[in-house]
Image (cartoon, rainbow, N blue to C red; front, top):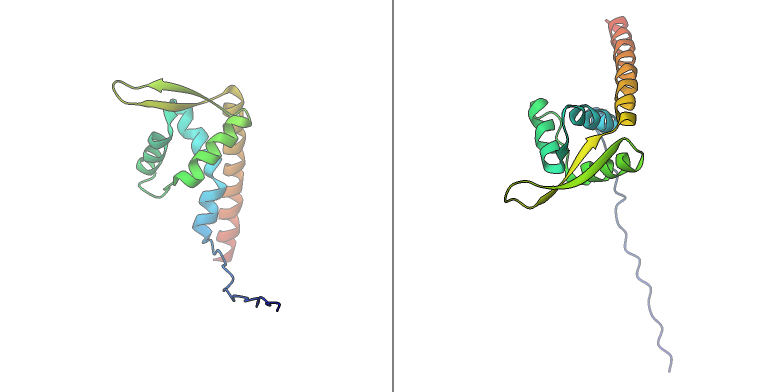
Length: 128
């Protein structure tokens, strides 16, 4: 006697991720934000997220799921370096610092953002 297995297909709703304009803009500015922060001084991951929130009045809230992969990619791309440091009695922390290439990229992206914002303002003003 053979047993037939019945295939059960579950219907699951398709998940759609809806990003707001604000989310899209923040995602698109992640690299320049990190470069700008690290141009001031080397920082470790948690310090970066706290400083970013502090300087932006909480507008930029970068979660670990975005922060660390971005830092690692930027390091791989030669924009950042990192080193482990021991801070007092605390555990070791990985500090990230901007490279000369990172400074060049920061300047280039800053210039591009200025042009982008100017053109966006012109387009918006023409609608009024």
